[in-house]
Image (cartoon, rainbow, N blue to C red; front, side, top):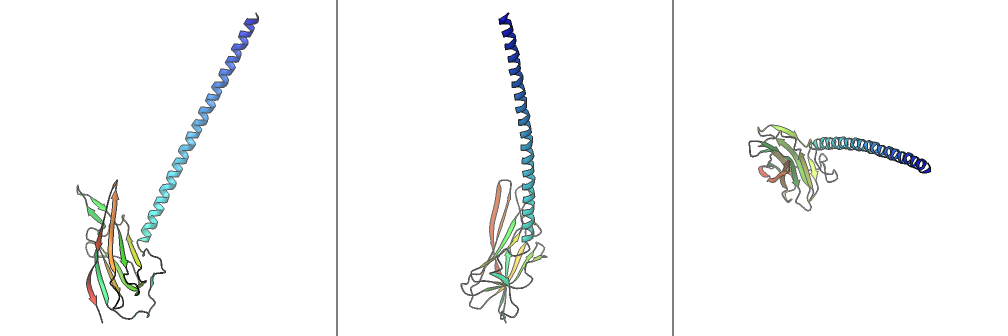
Length: 214
């Protein structure tokens, strides 16, 4: 009789333990399910934030394309009447906003134009920076007035990879002037682009095509 009662209590206790264990497993499963949903939500929110940030970054880069990428303390508008009339040189720089690739496709390229003052003492006056397409039509005038570039300083002008208006035969025209004893500037362009895991980059050097004097 006692053994039977003990067995009955043991069975009831075992059932309670099993029930508690089942409830614990269910709670853990529920917690894990909620945690997984929260994790998916957070990852989704993070992806949206990252995509938005990338879009904002691209938009900012697009706006930079219409202004010089250089601090104003060493590249700034010329004060009217502060520059004597000197020879104006015109430099042609061939650039490519896109190139042909195998299979008949095209790869868009970003363009960075660099104007470098190579003189240790004399400033360089950048009178004009103009961007033309393959048909010879003006796309963009980067400077509204002449700019003063400090000795040994550099000014840069950018065309985004998404801007393919220039085409295969695009070019920059840069007009500059300086004191007769000043060194000539170095003017060149770097093209770079990528698609998938492959990237392409190369340089192009400017050539003086017009020289005017008094």
